[in-house]
Image (cartoon, rainbow, N blue to C red; front, side):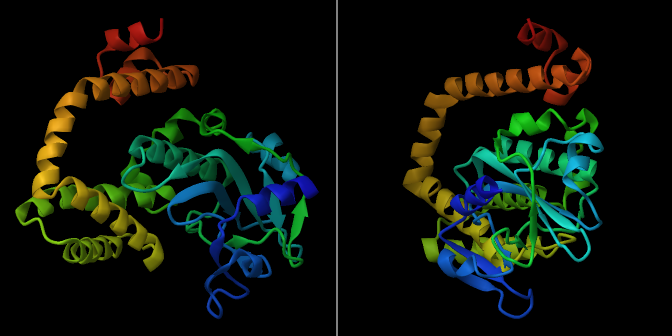
Length: 302
């Protein structure tokens, strides 16, 4: 049991949101103080080290693998009064959520998160921020396998049909909200900044305002600190790349890197094709999903 608790305590942010009651003392504290609270935010706003699922019914660890055919969670933190639980999956490689991150990686993680939640029957209304603190005496930590996972390892247990669910159909769950909001604000920012090239503070306020507006259109809007990080990330990246000088340099660099970018994109698609093939998809279905020719997929799979 100590191995699970060590994994948990060693993979928490130095400062994080925490509370004993959601609507009373919910604020950011130093980790040494946060671990004394009943609820804690295991992921920081810029990255995801843990996938967390909220199970609002009695459940036991053995049923995760045997009944739901899902890998054992790294941590199983249960409410001893009703048997409800939070399941924690530690990722070997954290998924970063900023303008410099791979959006394909974020989208892949979001699809896996949604797929696992679907298989487990987890609460789709859970926003994935505050979770039961495994170090607090109010909760019971039950025995599981103390291990971390790569995303592709978790993907193996997710049905292909679920993994390929369009973003718009899982818009309001977990990382999918981040993907959607990031994409929409980014598209607006790329167009808007070239109309005037404002100073950074003006630009940040404009991006934040746009992010707030789009966030309110979500069925389950994000908290201020969460969408503020998305806005700040986009504002910093676009302001650096799309100043008058930066935009010219960006165009030049893009031209030089286009060949390398195409090669990397093809390699990413080749890997996706092999994963989809392992899950039983036919070559034509893979080609349609990746927007390439059937002959290209056949060549990748040789």
